[in-house]
Length: 279
Image (cartoon, rainbow, N blue to C red; front, side, top):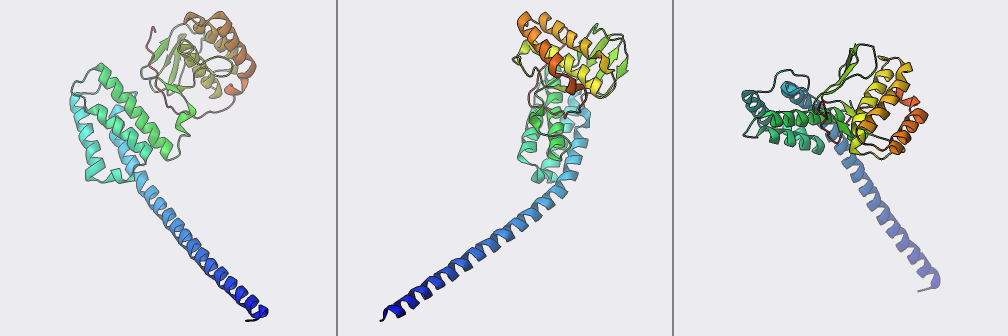
């Protein structure tokens, strides 16, 4: 066999191999495209079914809303547990839960199963259902990431004599005759910037964030910003923050706090902190 014939055969073999590899790659790409399209269609169908399922779950949990005046009864708790189990199994809505929502649902359902109903259990029920509802909102895009905010109240917090003579009321914050009430479920971030985020800063940051939020919402004039910053420092010192740390934090809010009264921030939670009046 001549050298020319060997060269032709080599090129033919290489050409056939390239053709085979090309056909294989094309087949794999077609399969990938088909699987991708099928997966997208499935996700769309799941999303369409998920919304009414989540709406029904939201409605079922209405009796645990944080602004309810009278405490939950044992009968209401038992009924809610049964309704949630029926919703999950009998109605088949559990098929549509994401892993994150399922985890929050499971925690909420578990706390309903406590045999002894007391004020501590009722408070824990409210806390778990606040988390569940916020997870539902996060899932359908009403809230941002769950980690945006670090703390939320599981009981109302009342602070007397805040030095503000304006009476106002929003969903979570109320000021009357110089007394501020921050309601259960309110979320905030704790200390940020140049100071360490620790427990004896929590009460100061709670009140300060609430006042800043009122200014962002234009419920409170922005001229009150310095008064809010001074109150922040005063509470921090009362709760045992050193003078150096309190002054450093005060300097930080004076230097860099202005944008926080002009912009809207999302409000979600991943850690709970319980504040009561007098603590």
